[in-house]
Image 1: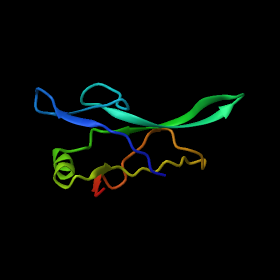
Image 2: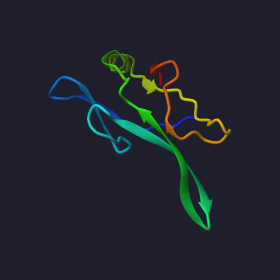
Image 3: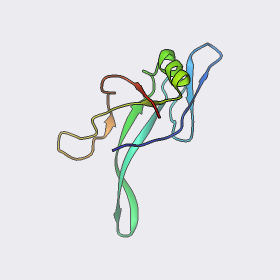
Length: 102
């Protein structure tokens, strides 16, 4: 499954990388976004699990590569829980962030 969102990276006053966007949560230095699973119950959509994707491992080199190539930053995660259902909680980025050409 693929999911896309637009997240803006900027340089904070102390020189660190910061992220902003409608999908971004958390304090500076601890930013993340969620992938949520939902279903319909009694005619209403309800979220039943979500995973947290941390942005702390995105490096200046990753962002430089995106800027240079015009590509997209990609994170691959294991979104399946031990019980075979959707994963929940924080999940590691498999193999680190990568850049894909659009």
